[in-house]
Length: 541
Length: 64
Figure 1 (cartoon, chains in turn green, orange):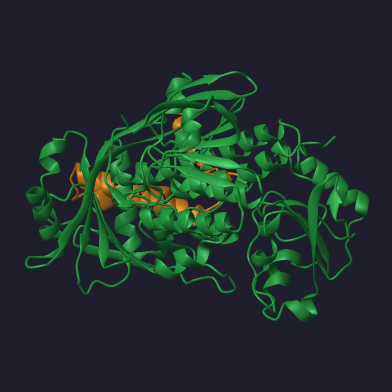
Figure 2 (tube, chains in turn brown, red):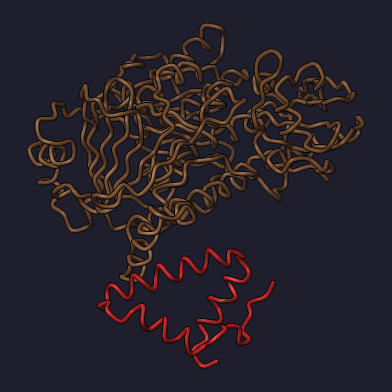
């Protein structure tokens, strides 16, 4: 039996018996366990590169509940590279204005003006089920084009054994058990990762003693499309902080911070939730409760994200507090980092050790996310009398004085981490802008036609700006494409100059398949590019 | 720039008087809040992270 643990929002991959269930264990190059956003993004990326991938999910579709609602620019750019970015942008809610309240008082308001010259906004609000559905929709498109991706719904992994060069899985289905084998296994099975437990691996970190009540309410109210955040909210029984944020389909996310010592069951009583929501929205507000949940959270990560032929990605590898939207967003960056490396390893073009750089780079990202979300949590829930005094002093000053506003921390929104000083990094001999240094993810820029990131489509790319670059088709089989740009012709807005040249007049950039900068020079010879590609695939000297 | 730990306050007695005066009609909770605001205002004025770190270290040394 495969238990149904949650209700389905979109039934996207209904169970269907496959011949493999009656055969001896078949070997797959890659098996992904868990069909959430990270599993599906990884499958899509690998499949689009031609590497055969099987996704096992214990349900038949996407679970209900808005969950991760805030998707950052980098995530949308990655989704766009995979083909799903515009569906997300079209459905999502774009917002710029945030208001911060302390009790009855409106402390200040900020307007995150969209930065000009980017294809995607800083973030959108979108219910997680839509995010997952758009990825699966794109997988169906890729499959129709021949991408070797298979999804098996209601396939529950009940046991795994590690044989060094492969793993064996026991799988339960509505038609009974069967087995299969995988050269590589990617665990995208969430924060409670059963695979991590089956392997006896630890997941250490800090538990925050607090409960947050989430209520998604559907209403045709005249609230503006803004993010409203209250410290010590004035409405009755609303806890220590509260958040009101708009999602698509006239749904509003409301969060109440309830404290630690609560009766979960009583708090989830719809009557009780309605009384809180009434107090917040005002008497007579008409709404329906769409989805409610109580969560506590932890900030922690695995020591290593690679264990032999098993790779952990997303919440199974690291967990953060929700403040700052760093959970799903960082998981998608894991997928982005992992897929091209695993693809090259499977094709025999890069050594297996390249996968250790996945662990190293993404653990660095996880540490940054944990640091940021822990700091936000400490501001939101002061842990001592003195920290409470300082927190309220900041809020008291922020109304009157601009200097105190940057200290107010209700979550720093996710930005991609820079892989500074990492082993795959090549030469940085350009005296260029900081934001596009080696290790950074490429900053988008509008060109005379389209955007720069549209030219970086998942393989190593050389960008030559105002200069010639060696026209290499490949480096020892690793494909390479060339984008030649002339700022006089291709850069009408000046953004390319500003973001990639700064004071310099010309540059050559080597970009990895995940759109991070691998190396950059004022000018480059064939030997320079070759050495940087080899370094970036783990074959460097 | 280094943290200045030499005498730098003009009219020290007058300043000290003013500091106590500011707290005179405050209860403990109000005084704590006042001090926190004052620290933040002064830290912002200094701004320099190295100097602030030195100041935190100097304040931590009770017997110095």
